[in-house]
Amino acid sequence: MISQLIEKIQKTKAPVCVGLDPMLSYIPECIVKKALGEWGETLEGAAEAVWQFNKEIIDHTWDLIPAVKPQIAMYEQFGIEGLKVYKRTVDYCREKGLVVIGDVKRGDIGSTSAAYAAGHLGHVQVGERTLSGFGTDFITVNPYLGTDGVKPFVDACQKEDKGLFVLVKTSNPSSGEFQDKLIDGRPLYELVAEKVVEWGELSMDGDYSNVGAVVGATYPEMSRVLRRLMPKTYFLVPGYGAQGGTAKDLKPCFNEDGLGAIVNSSRGIIAAYKQEKYASFGAEHFGEAARQAVEDMVADINQVL
Image (tube, rainbow, N blue to C red; front, side, top):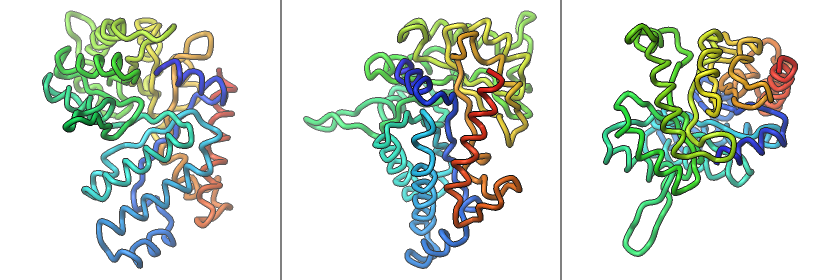
């Protein structure tokens, strides 16, 4: 699967993915009013507004990018109706030829991880039929429970030709409370990185492994160390733009060939119309504002690479 993602990155010349993380506050009022007018002030109404918003963003950006990253929590907050829209969004993106990275951050004991892996990456047996649950191409995984919590996901990658991004050094301000703690004189994130390499050797796909790593753009010096420790590991890089990471900060995440990382931006793209830079588009043209934000992000990153 990582080879398919790399192929799409090379084709689009855009090492970026759009984070489909819709909050109602990001959605233009006209869309919310229309959805709630049809469905009432209900979870169904909120979910419909999210779907209409997502579809517009996708329709305006799909040809510029290789991948999207829907964050499942933004859908789960609306219960079952939200999860239906999550699935509908995944399916629509795949119809458009996009790689879908499900930001689900799963991780549990072996049997539970196996069930998560089946639901998000693989298939489940129902009588005589083998059925797919969410059908994403990659998911994010929390490694805190160790190898027996991650191995079922790696097995699914091998069986289904899918991929993972394991949390190694995240972009949030308090990530260092645990991730930077020294163990035998080394920060914990380095030890996790070495395990990611070990797990990744079980699922190689060309020059890179299907087992990638989440490495935040907000800590470039740490990214440089992690790039050295994980030369065959693809990085999913959050933290660009709204969280403060710059294009210059991203450079250590990439290898010398310009590959090795895909950079996510969520509200910086989907809520671009709210920024002063793109205010001229207006709320009614939020999809066009998102497209321009993608084009600007790609140009910003490529000039550094």
